[in-house]
Length: 71
Image 1 (tube, rainbow, N blue to C red):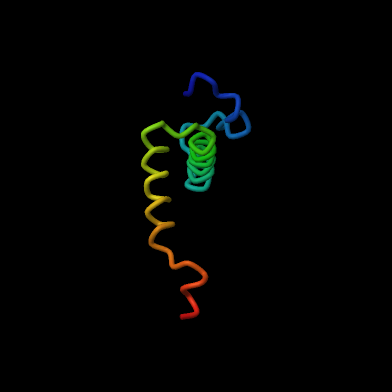
Image 2 (tube, rainbow, N blue to C red):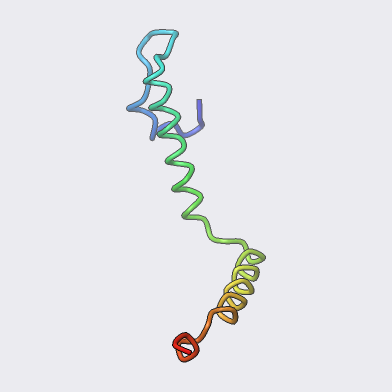
């Protein structure tokens, strides 16, 4: 089990050796949601920030200006 299994306490199995499909889906869903939230909370690496800034600038240059749209 995980070193810090506090978040999984409500998902513990009873004294059986087999988990139902429903229980397995519940645990996997719980773990995936936690992983997704953890990833969203991490700060972006500097190399990604630089790349995102470059892409944003290119996108801004490629978009038509509002004065050009009506012409």
